[in-house]
Length: 113
Image (cartoon, rainbow, N blue to C red; front, side, top):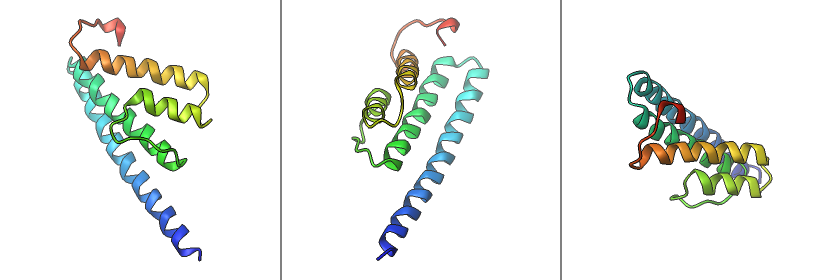
């Protein structure tokens, strides 16, 4: 009877491990781009890493989300489920705003990042 639970747990562990490799790879690329003066590109890629991290947290805690959910809905889902507090939610929404500013045409300064 415990075999299905064990398999589900192993699958989640494997998905989390693969996800962490993906996230680290994206953060490494974002850092490289930022150091080479491609700030907007770096912000977008760092946002992709953050979205994946939030998806992993939702999966880990059994919180449903849509594949198309971005940083804001994922952060709100985690907050509604009591997995993050208001301070973390505000920080995530701030980071999501930076990612949106990087992804959409708008002049941003170094101070905005």
